[in-house]
Amino acid sequence: MATFLVLTLLTLSSISSPTQAEIFTSIGQMTDLIFTERELVQSLKEYIEAEESKLEAVKSWANKLDMLTRASTSDPEGFLAHPVNAYKLMKRLNTEWSELESLVLQDPSDGFISNMSVHRQYFPDEEDEKGAAKALMRLQDTYKLDSESFSKGKLPGVRYNALLTVDDCFDMGKLAYNENDYYHAVLWMQQALRQMDSGEDAKTPKADILDYLSYSVYQMGDLPRAIELTRRLVAIDPSHQRAGGNLRYFERLLSKELRDRGSSQQEPADERPIQLDTYERPKDYLPEREIYEALCRGEGVKMTIKRRSRLFCRYQDGNRNPRLLLKPMKEEDEWDSPHIVRFLEALSDEEIEKIKELAKPKLARATVRDPNTGVLTVAHYRVSKSAWLEGEDDPVIARVNQRIEDITGLTVDTAELLQVANYGVGGQYEPHYDFSRRPFDSNLKVDGNRLATYLNYMSDVEAGGATVFPDFGAAIFPRKGTAVFWYNLFKSGEGDYRTRHAACPVLVGSKWVSNKWIHERGQEFRRPCGLTEVD
Image (cartoon, rainbow, N blue to C red):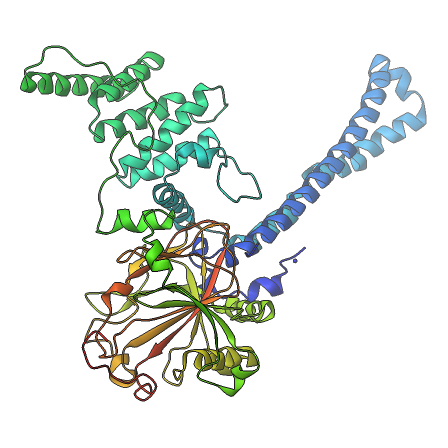
């Protein structure tokens, strides 16, 4: 559960540009922005104080000169008859007004603008904003949360309340609209309209909300409601550029539909508010989407009484490994077939903090292998940042690697480096296999396929973030300091397709994990071949 006045130029220069891109994909890196914003607020306050001090000085000048000019203009000759007044007039106009001019021309904003310029290069960009918005929609879908839940901050496990304004909801809907995602455009435009109708102030005109909402509803196939919304738009803005044309077009389409159905009477528009289930969510590329998302919500887990009776806990000494004899590892069964176990107290808090400290400067957008080219690339279905740590980086990494070998009984000499991952806003990794099914993976020629996965949970997660297996209906939730382990291959070397799994989107919290992919080479006598293909 990952829950410094701070960023000097030296600190900022230590952040390398490759890791700074796509900030929204890592909560760990986003925390730096909190401190950046705090420093900018302090800089802004200093600018305001400087402006107020300057304004007070100018006001003092104006008040003094106002009193003076009132006296002088009432009797100019009499005033100037006094030689001191004549001298001071010359002095004021020659010197003092120039000083006042210099004061007025001073720009206290220079320091603030300079500070902004320094930090701006580390600000999120448009893609970050878009990525974070899409993440909210992903969370909305996965956990079946309506727009109001986000708008009013009604999320499970939250410690800090956060609200979305009418303008925020409108921007969310507009982003979805521009991506031709009319399903989410409807939900967010409806929420913007609901909040505006309840009296909330906004910069966005109601006509704009109705314009986007009516057309998005039309795209969802709801002509009666599209007509009703467009009529509302015409009523508040009769000269709207598109509304009149759209209304006539929608009415013609509806009349044609009625004629085709042999009906002469138009059904009234549904007056119920648009909810999550009002329109069917469009299908996408993932065949097990519904099962996967249900498991993320803790629904559909196939943990029966009979299966639970086959799960046990034990002390694991690694087949009498000397390093585990005095303090064996606590092991719990999470699933019977395929066998998945959880190790308790696998990492200490100190080890976790050291691993995170080593990984943070190296974090970069996590990649996947393109199924067509075999090239590593980023993908929308894997939203996190990762770093790879070697045993030589720190004694802690070497110790963790040795522990993995001791517990599993498998050599890590041919394993991949320890991968550390931090999930960002709505961070996830959709269903995938850890083992390779492609002949062009060059790593297979040397070290063989990914035999097993060892996954450390390095944080608790307030809500979401489970590891789920859609094929057999298992959901394993993060518990800080524990680790889970499973085999990806049968003893024959054939892939166990049941191990297709996913990292559910993080709803609330920051999820840190580290994993070790253990390969086949070197395991010949540690995990011998079985008698059948599926042993």
